[in-house]
Amino acid sequence: MINVFQPTLGKEELERLEQVFASNWIGKGKLVNEFEAIYAEHLGSTKDRVLSTNCCSEGLFSSMHLCDIKPEDEVILPTVSFVGAGNAVCANGSKMVLCDVDKRSLNATAEDIERVITPKTKAILLLHFGGIACDMDKIMDLADTYKLKVIEDCAAGVCSTYKGKALGTFGDMGMWSFDAMKILVCGDGAMLHFRDPELRERAEKWLYFGLQTKSGYENSVAQKWWEFDISCFGHRAIMNDVTAAIALEQYKKLPTYMEKRAAVHEFYNEGLKDMEWLDLPLPIEQGCTSSYYFYHIQTKNCMRDQLAKFLRDNDIYTTYRYFPLHRVPGYGVSGIFPGADYAADNTLCLPMHQSLSQADTEKVVEKIREFGKLYC
Ligand SMILES: *Cc1c(COP(=O)(O)O)cnc(C)c1O
Image (cartoon, rainbow, N blue to C red; front, side, top):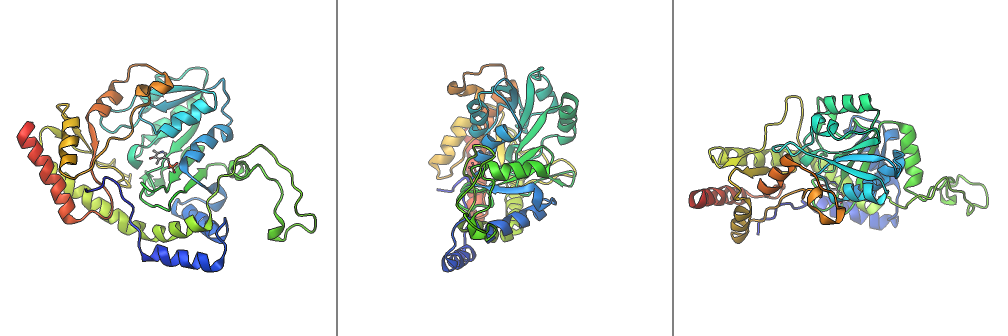
C-alpha cells in the first residue's frame, strides 16, 4: 500500500537517541531548550515568544485559557477544522460559531469570517489548510476592527510563510504539530508561538501545573526546595529530551523534505494537468511559501468516493481532511456551508510524503488517469 502520509526516520535520529540514553536524562532538559531556540530562529522570532508542548491539540485547548476566552464568549472557526479545535472551544463551554470556507483552498476568507461576527465574538481560531496561508492581511485587519484575538492552527505549516513572515506568527498564538502524521515528526510534540512574550510566560506556567517556584535540581533554591506555590491550576504538557532529540535531527532534514515534497507536487501537477474532470491545487500566492503538506485534488463530477475506492483497491491510500464540523452530529451545529460542503464531497488528498519513490508517484498518476478513462 502506498501511504497517504508517512514519517521519514533515519539513523541520525537513532544516534541522537543513543546519546539521550547515555546521558540518563530523558525528561525536559537541554535538548528541549535547544529545540525551542532553533525553532524560534526558524520562525524569525525570538526565544521569549516560543514554547514547546506535548501536542498541538494541547495548544488548541490551552489557547482558550491563555487568550482569556470565557464561556459566554463566541469563537469563530472554519467548519473545515481539526476536531481538536472544535473540542477546545466546546470543552471551554464557549459557543463554537462555524464559518464557511473557500471551496477550492478550503481556507476561510475574511468575508466568511465577517459574516458570522456578533457582539459576543471574542476570537478567531483559524486553520491554515494544509499549511497554506489564509489571507492574513485582511483577516488581521478584521481582527483589529472588531478587537478579536487570533489563534492560528498552523499544525502542518512547518515551513510556510505569508509575505515573507512565518505563518503562525501573525496572531496572538500560533501552533505547529510534530505528531506522527506531520512533516517534522518526533512521536508527539508541538511548538507554540506568542506575539506577546508575557503571554508566553503565562503559558509556561499554565503548561506546568502553574508552578511558581524553581525546583531544587536547578540549584536555584537554597533550602526546603520541596515547597512551592502555584499561580493557576495548570496542566502538565511538556516535551522531553527523547522527543526533542528526534525533533532536532528532523529539523536538519527539513530543507531536503521540502525539496522532495515540492518535486512530488510538481510531478502530480504535470501528470494530472490535462484531466478535465479534476481541479488541481491552486497555485501558491505570490510571496507565500507552502510546506506541501497536502496535495489535494477535487473531482468536478462528484466521483470522489469512487476514485478513493478505486485507488485503495489498487493499493494507493488517500484521504480527505478535515471532515467539516457542521457534519459531526456530536457538535449539534447546523447551518449552510456551500463551500465546505463542496470541498467535503469532492476533495481527495493524494499520497504526499518524503519517502515516495518515483514508481509510487508514477503509479498514483497512472491509476488516476486510468480511472478517468473508465468513468469520467
Ligand atoms: C495534526 C493536527 C493537529 C493536532 O496535532 P497534535 O500534535 O496531534 O495534537 C491540529 N490541527 C491540525 C490542522 C492538524 O493537522
